[in-house]
Amino acid sequence: MKVFEFDPTTGKRGDCIDNVKVIEWTAESVEFAVNNDKIDPVDCVMPVDNHRTEHTLHIDAGIGIGSTHKSYRHATEWRTFCMGESMVGHGKGVWCWIVLPPTDLIKRREPA
Image (tube, rainbow, N blue to C red):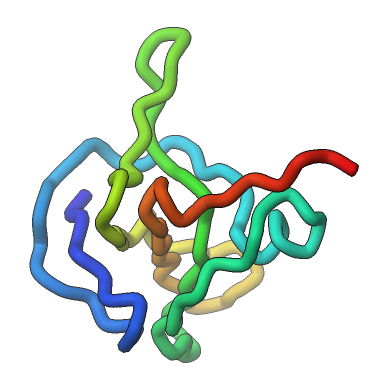
């Protein structure tokens, strides 16, 4: 799976920076975490979805290694990658892209 740079000010994919194993897991979406008061909002211009692509901003994503997880998120740089084509409920299929903000932008909120 190819991993690309991502520009959060334009919503554009940049250069391919890595080729890694296919994603096995994603953490919750940023939208879900913000709506449930788990994290502070993350500013990002998302790519425009069309009838064959959808983009989701996630807190984290990666692969499982034994009993631990390896994250594809970077400490200071934005990343994006396609986790594949989903046929579920879409008819012709939709290419599902994940956008990961840097670790330093995920500000967890203390439980009330």
